[in-house]
Image (spheres, rainbow, N blue to C red):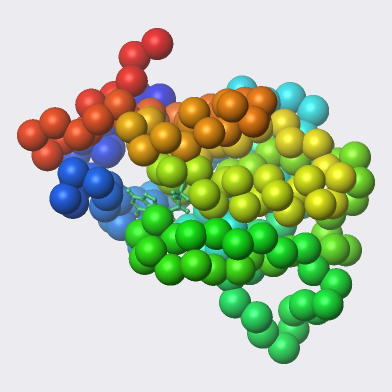
Length: 191
Ligand code: 5GP
């Protein structure tokens, strides 16, 4: 998606050849106009979706944007922390290693928000090693849901996430797909 690639080249900052900082339009401040364009682009790639699933925090805004494009689908986000309002005993759980923090988190979704046979599109901000998406897939399999696909706003192909998901038979579509970082700039994948 050209508008997103242009924005990344203009405002993204590459850290240690590993992390792309996009806090001025994705992870801290959000560019709502670009969010709508991204949401439309993702919607054009997947059909027959019943529900959107994401993981807190940065995936939520984009998941809602995509849900709206499908005419108002429910959006469920996995929680990374336990609170008194989460019914832990009646939740699906998976372990996910955080790419940016290196810590191990348990992610949970209350069983009442996933129904067997529902067709789910997974949305996240980034796809790197694929751990977050695979944790969500584990939860969706526990619930007996069907996985329509995974869409991250930005993927870094060189960190292996896409390959792991495709090896599981999951379709991946990302509006911005980065093959590598060269001289501190992203090099976008060309099909
Ligand atoms: P994965 O689990 O695929 O290794 O990493 C995906 C998660 O790590 C995303 O949910 C995102 O929050 C975070 N992440 C991975 N790479 C980056 C990056 O380059 N920049 C930012 N801001 N977050 C990232």
